[in-house]
Image (cartoon, rainbow, N blue to C red; front, side, top):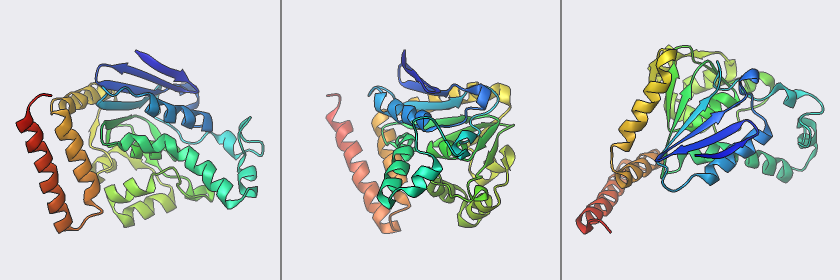
Length: 259
């Protein structure tokens, strides 16, 4: 069932699995503010029955990042250019960037598991979109790069937190300030990728992972995800308390039986 098809974003739902597809392969799924709004809308349209969301890009690349038109003086028609944004107040600039970030925030909701299927280039905003997901399955031709700093900017689409969490501060800093490519083998070795497979096997590997997630009871998956997401902000003893509380909820729910 198709729920959205606009501005380079297609949302399809089949039972408990939703697939969000970037649909502009001619431009290597380059991103625009309109695409970001469509991605945010896709998150709002998800039915409550969805447990797994797969994010993929049509064509040879997952996403080559921000559409280069953004760097022209006129920018995108109907959108504030970088020059316009710079001339606005601090509050106005903050509000614009916060709106853009909404496309990247909903993928880590506790009620879903999000999986990015990455092939070819995932650069800049494309890298950050892959990082927005819980899990990343990559083709062996995948190449990640964070190019914002090389362009005189900073990564601002929610990618810095998961990047540091996955690979550590020093490696994250080096990746960002050099703008170099991280190839699939390094991505798997350093924790950026959960799995790397031949490109021809990418879709099948994602289906297998989605099926494995769906095999576990939904409420237990939700509780486990929430527990793990909060772990980095808790002390060891605080996490022990959180584990006890979560397990208590699960045991009471199991004892109560079906509603």
